[in-house]
Image (cartoon, rainbow, N blue to C red):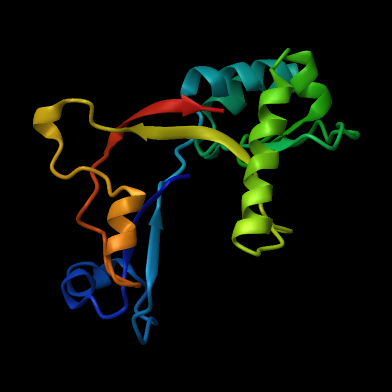
Length: 184
């Protein structure tokens, strides 16, 4: 997901406008990085996964199950499917293994390249071990393409380099979270 904005812990305007969105147990403010929300896979793709991988006796029930709307597909490129419990089928955090990707004729090399680049950045640029990182397929909101609707242009790396560390950037973005695009 893309990073959308940063809020410094001393940005009283932002915190006073948004504090009600946090648990009441939050005792003090801290720096906050807001990233893009990964939206679930759209209905036609969810139904395709159900038709392909759900036991035939449970297809209709799986399509109507409310919990299956929260479908992110976890990608397991280093793992093939093991024995599947046919009594339970869920699309929530659906695991898509290498053999399934091959069966679906997905372009696996594109996934491996993108994941390798992300892991390299996390390791070499951010100094993170990335041991608990999960890569998922989901959808993302559309950005505004109509110049009349753009309130602020996104910050460039040049813009960011000119501001002092820990400066809030929350008011320099726009997105339409009611429409989405599928990203793999």
